[in-house]
Length: 234
Length: 399
Image (cartoon, rainbow over all chains, first blue to last red; front, side, top):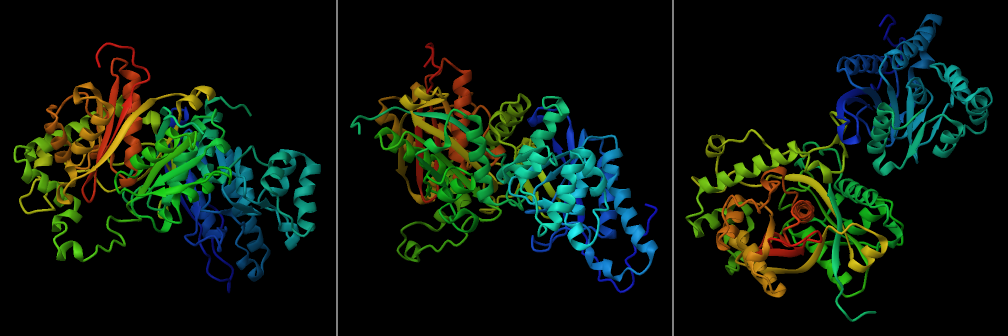
């Protein structure tokens, strides 16, 4: 990591989102191999969603390195119960007073998230719960996305006077076309900050599959195995 | 409504992998385990319209917290079954799922319902044995039961006392064989067939998926077993090695009238012949399967020689040995628990009854010369339960 993980002076201490990692055997799902499953969890309940500050991004960065070192057939990211991730940790942003600090935040997110696309191993986001802003952007950098049927997703940055700067503004148009991207990035945000329901996210092409929350992880892992085995074509 | 008794069949049965208590399912709720088993069961049986399920009977030995709130109804809602499908809860301690099965079978047989789910769950990590138990002081004051009756390990020691020829060495040898049979069944891919991969969350470790039982110890040896402590009595015979452990898991079975199963083109894995429960002295609760089996055989007009396959719950090795000894069956008879048993895979109390059935159903598929089999288990506070099943694949030959 070349970028600083220092918070600006005066900023509150970061609530760190840990990136835990475990191996999932795909054999019972019809593929010989394992999946390295990264769980984003800040150790608090759903009322304090996972967020990404500098230390959280460093934790995810380390987890991606660890995951790849296990030589898995795929890497996947999931959140804690009810929450995938709610985006950048905004609590430090109001303390920014130098251009370099702002730039560093943007760059740090890109440096970490882009690895999910460039790592040379199929990557999946299992979006099990709320995914907003940077939370959704992590998923956008992955090769495939599954979404829990009751999870809300969105890019609320424009509503907050920001832009989806960790890939949202660039990946979404490539993924689903500029008109639909405008709807998600600008239209929804300016329409009372509307979040997407799962059927909308699926219809718009933001995610590849939607599964019931009751067995979302099991179904998502089965989806990953079916992609790896070629049973499901993309 | 028909006044005739109708034939009841086991359509299918599944279970979650069993965990060690509070280990791989440490952050997983009991009701979520139950839901997973139910959803896995329905997914394997797409010909069954969930709305057509007439009732859901789910057992748990401790019905509070995540096993409370009428777990039968609650798990039905959480599993996403239509809200029109009712559910209720069953408790007969270890024989919960066995009793859920016989209870829905009774309703099917009399024509009240056509299709039902029966199952059980126990998260012994969340609900240690004896949690919230408040035995009436009269039990001991009036010597209604002996002190040992409420400690299951002590009841197993009492069985050793009653049958001195059922030695610790025989119990250990039986336990070792259970581990070896389970290891072989795993190696042959036989146990995995009925396991539903289950999300397991540990708050410290993150999410994982349980795909195999956590408890089996394939490296068990007689020497290792011989050296284990006897926690229930100084210089006793019952050890952690020749007992089932404390476990977390859930099971679910689909039962139907034979007519309905045929109408819908469902699999028929076993046909229920009859069942029986019986009481014994609570301090030797492990003996329960003997009178319950005698009673069931009598109702069926069968003898023990007619039974070609046995699934006996292994709460304790000595309790299985007492059963086999009574009926003159060898300790290592290949008809008994061919895939091993609870000593290896674990015994999440109220869930285990259906595990016996799914194993028996596999034996029925493999052994078409076997006509009848039984699932039986001992029950705390001095009971046994036995279901006699007929093999639908039977093609003659041996019994």
